[in-house]
Image (tube, rainbow, N blue to C red; front, side):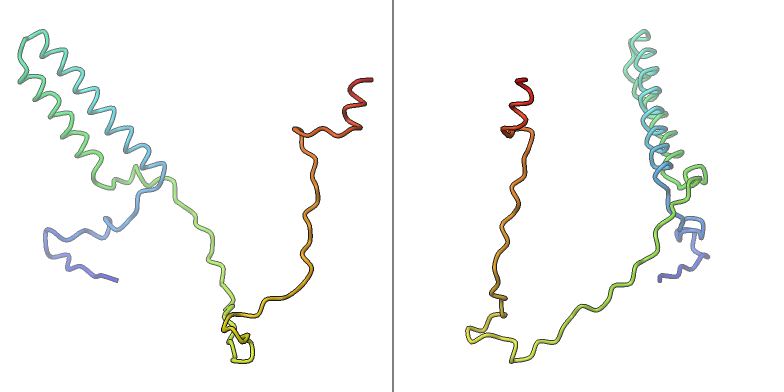
Length: 138
């Protein structure tokens, strides 16, 4: 675990170690998209009527900066829905030591020589049986 010296102005605060939840990410993306598009559209309309592209650019830039200020920090409004993770399930150690007696003469693992089971034939909707065809005809 990394520990920071909080005396430096560039080190993250203890609050910055929290993680944004999924609903917060969705809200964050919505706010960013809405502000950028809304301010860009208003700036485009004002710039169109004033015949000045610089107004359009500055208006869009203000919307972009505003949305970045609202969306880049991990504000508490983005952490309202706590994520509850399942407990970790312990795994049993499945490693089995292999002795030299378990190997066959070819050097590979032993394979059981048994009868293979044939899969049961399943009837599907695409292949009707004789009884189903007869019942539909009657």
